[in-house]
Image (cartoon, rainbow, N blue to C red; front, side):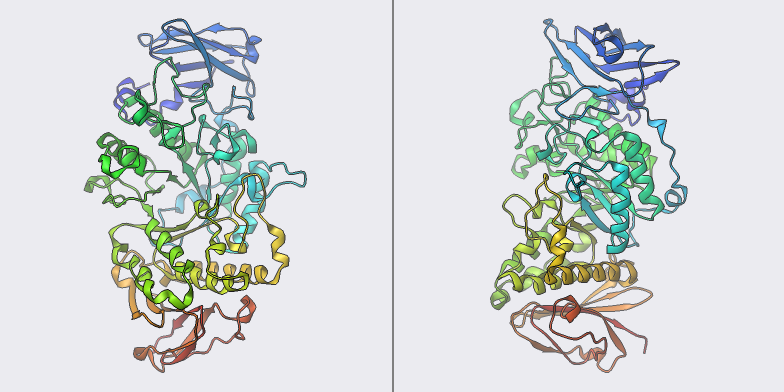
Length: 589
């Protein structure tokens, strides 16, 4: 082990030393507890009797060898503080844990599974000039078995892959799957940062999940939580009787969610998290990490008025730079709602080193616009044009995530103005705006069904709503929209270049009509929108008489609209029905 890098806060492989590892015919157990007076090991292999661990490295680390330990057996560390008081803790670096409410660690070996995804791994990149359509999934509530129990990682992979291929998603983002004690935390209150949650199986089964996705040309992003951890006593909290991983003062040590905030200024904490990020990417072949609540690292407690936490930004830069050096083709995504600059600039240019940043402004502005009565949207007209004023300042991902579908916020479909039947045409038009707008895409499971019930982690998605024509037609539309995005280079090849986008109409305030062109080396597409409550005639004079076809019209009757399918159009003059949108492909003159 490289002690200097561990204490310095730039060790990405510490998980290969700490935790439990095979040694000969047994296993060696190691833990970092610098302020403990004594540490003992208890496990099934010892009959749950205490085995004293020997101090090493100046009493800062403790280790013990158990020659009769076997994979699958539970164990736990009993840590005594300076006053002799003891608390049992799970292994901070353990690769497995028991099913809640159990909290013992479980011996797992990473070499149990062999990947067969060489072709995918050789050809993947960060998707800057490729389409990236992400389906955000909570594994426990996407689908469940008839008795309400969960599928394991391997079982759900087959169903989820087939669904994504049919529906048009080429990336899956898993909500956090590191072990956590409470289902209702959705995985954001971790107790076992290196342990895939036992709710859905073992480490080997999770590896199989990722491998199966890759062999079907689907990438997998992991939601990663580097800000805080659960306050449960058996976790990281006061691990050695002192605030080892967290801040010592409650004013910055306790988060708004009641969890403990990581102290990123401490080298051993930074190495714990950097190593954890690398572990998921290297050992499980995840294609990238979506990092949760990055603003809470950039600013003290996420509050801009408190100022920038320089140790926090240094941590992010060191981690992202180190990950890119080790895995250059990984994708790093920031959930950051602040205006902090250079989030997606390379570290060598004084950036934070992310590839993408969630565009929270786009999300808020778009949903607020569609909450407004269509007859009065003129007053909010430039709410939708504003996104392109700042778009080139960062590399953005347009995300309508789980947060927009839960806990009193209403689902995306519910947010559309009006009664039940009024919501569907607006949602179709809104999603076309999102999918033709520059930026990578992410939606939360159930959104493609037009789900009206807010997400509940204890219930599977409402698949039976597809028996209703409005939802079935909407689902048909969303599949067509997804595949249109994946199949047309103009929608992704030059999205980060200013010459890949041009406004054709962004001043029709009273009509609430918008039009823009998406341009690539291979094709030119026009997206046109009427978000008002009345039909309107529209003309693009520069393309009058140009040979063109409609790729997708939200008002076609097969999607629940009013018009029969007809792909013929003259861009120089046509009628755009109320609450509708269309994407038009121009052909060479």
